Amino acid sequence: MLDRLLGRAQRLPASAGTLEVMLLERFGLSPDTGTAPYALKADDPGFDAEGWWLHADPVHLRADLDQLRLFDSRHLGIDPAEAAALAEAFNAHFASDGLRLHTPRPERWYLQVQEPPTIATHPLSEVAGRTIDPFLPTGDDARRWGSLMNEAQMLFHQHPVNARREAAGRPAINGLWTWGGGRWAGIDRPVDLGTIQAGIALARGLAAAAGIEASAPPPAPLGLDAPGTRLLIWDACQSAVSDADAMAWCEAAAALDDWLAPALLALRRGQLGELVIDTVDGGRYRVRPRDLGRFWRRAKPLAARILTAPSH
Image (cartoon, rainbow, N blue to C red; front, side, top):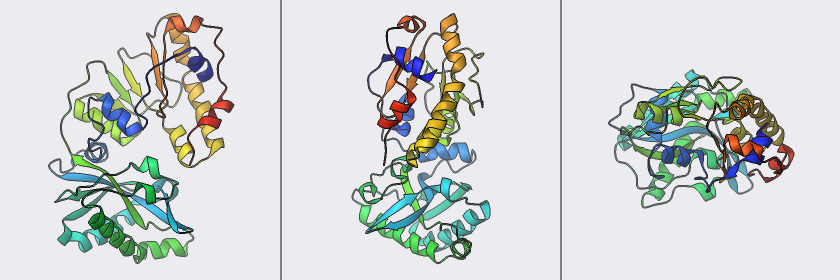
């Protein structure tokens, strides 16, 4: 199904290349807009919208030769009590620095900063599974900020939460990955966007800022009963790429293939005007009903596509 759609599709100009930038541009925002307050809006609708916020995602940093490799919260199994205990210790320690850690979800944390640092950062999705050195913050305040985050690592390393985790053979929550800092602001609703179906917090928070209805994607298959243009995000493939797990990628792509089956039928019947698929790696494809007649174009099999998927 997915092979056939992509095989018959028209190739569009390259997309942004990261999911975060693609979403920002889809809502008419510049690529350097801070994403943290929008993701936080989804995780905690009553948050302090007047503050300046960073993503401060809990991570495990593991020594790999002379570098540190980062593993995100999907591999940590953090429970709310652990998140709350580490946040309490962090906030007591860094109160004089004007930093406050907020943990509305065990797997996603945020940092409120009184004096926003002048740093350029990289999204967690770019760093997960990799060594961190090429992705460390840069800018006028990078050295001071790096010192603060190293101090946080030492604080977490000595905390009873991590002593218990290590005694149980579980990876320590020994670092924060900070990125995407900014302030909350309302967004003009894109005139060509009706609804959003996405599990990721950033998409749901941007929808809230623009006054757009948002919900989680249906398990399967894709429903096509609602009118208007919809944005749907399938992020299971991205998780597999972050883990360099070819089998998980194939399974996620196969599930997406089944999920999209009604779209092909709707295109054939003329019930769907067009389907645009953005692979968030520079690839963007558009399929219209008339494109399905291009039978001479051979579809590239999934087994071949995995060979060109981004790797770490």
